[in-house]
Structure formats: C-alpha cells, structure tokens
Amino acid sequence: MSGVWVFKNGVIRLVESPNQSGSDTNSRRKVMVYLPTGEVISSYSTLEQILRSLGWERYFGGGDTDLLQFHKRSSIDLISLPKDFTKFSSVYMYDIVVKNPNYFHVRDSN
Image (tube, rainbow, N blue to C red; front, side, top):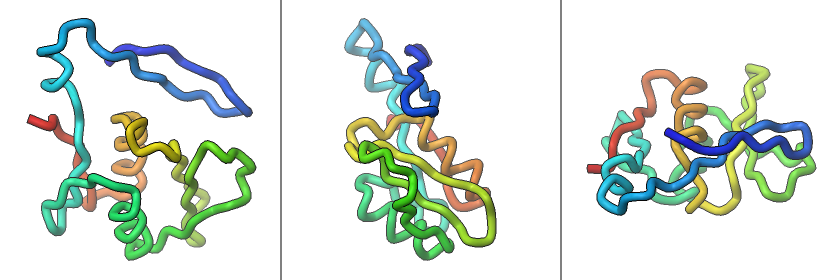
C-alpha cells in the first residue's frame, strides 16, 4: 500500500495512490466481506444497514461534511468514512474490522 498522509480538520488519513501498472491494480484492490452472510459490501446503504444491526448509529456532530460517521452508545469508538463510496479504501475497511471483530473481513477482490 502506498500513498500520502493528509492532515485536514484535525484528522490524519492515508490517501492511497493507484499503482502505476494496470495489471497490479485489480490484484491489490480490497473488498470487505460481512462474515455472517458472506456478502461483499458494495454500497454504503448495505453497510449502514449492517452497522445499525450491530448497534452503530449515524453521528452528525463531527462537523465534517465530507464524512459519514457512526458511533456506538456503548463505546467511545467512532467510524468515519468518506461520503463518496469510490473512496472507501482498505484503510476505512480495516477500521471497521477492528471495531467489529468477528463480523467483517478484508480480502483481495480477486
């Protein structure tokens, strides 16, 4: 994974840069799988339904309009995602996996 770290509005995030060779791009793309059903997460509407079933709620207090945010009342965890699903990279996927052990898995798309 390569990219540039960007600091914006008090949040640091890794902006991944695409590979130079087209053949490597597909082999390095990641997908997130919801383990109970084996479903690949392909949209935020699907992801939001699953997160809600796991006790996550939309959080609107962050002030950053470029992000979708979710929180759990039972923890201090916050999941922040870019509003544009095409920017949903492995960095965000692994954040969800860590905060929801045994429910999600990240794997290569191939």
